[in-house]
Amino acid sequence: MIKKSDILIIDKENGLREWLLMLTQERYRLITEAVEKNQAVTVEQLVNEIGASAATIRRDLTALDELGKVKRIRGGAAAVEQEFLTSEDDVDTKYEKNVAEKKAIAEYAASTIQNDDFIYIDAGTTTEFLIDYIDISVSAVFVTNGIVHAKKLISKGFKTYMAGGLIRAKTEAVVGSEAVESIKKFNFTKSFIGANGIHPFHGFTTVDTDEAMLKKEAVNHSYVSYVLADHTKFGKVTAVTFAPLEKACIVTDGIVKDKYKELTLIKEVHVE
Image (cartoon, rainbow, N blue to C red):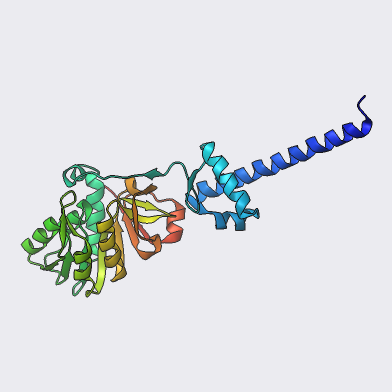
């Protein structure tokens, strides 16, 4: 025979389970909203925002990852819409992609170059287009790790230095520790850098470790750095981060989400 007291205990237990479930669902909602808004968040950020313990947040993130709501990453979570890349196209393939966008970005970037600038130009297709738009009357000095870039610069009559080191055939770029050492003595007024991915949490990324070393050094030795990237680079992450977003201005053709604008300066160019 079931006693009235037993029924009350059962009701209390059911009520507690429902209450706990409600709390869990509310945390899930808050976490997914935070991830969607910021594209990526850390456990610490979620602890501060939601008020739950770090252990609880980690369990929630694991559960949400299994549900396909977020992507669990080390130290936090990222939006599932972001794309992780492990390889890149060769130079010839890159030349065929988003040409109008790259040229619009390059033309604006070239307009920022002034007399007496000491410029670093990174290897890449967009940065190569940049050289086409530099006014030949500009009395700037250039350093580059791009083989084709160096040839274009000297053909236009610019004083040009070439970084020394290993040549990476896929990108036609000089890379590695020797290249890093060769530019350490320089202090650039401006640098123009390419990137494979741009992400609020992971920053500016590239596929190759050796290229990342050189990009990082160029950014660190520049008064102002510009990352030239079309809209397809946003929300993507590749193997190596070479700089956080706040270290460089972004020149792009896309309509950029507010989250990126909160982290760095962005110039959105018009494409004809």
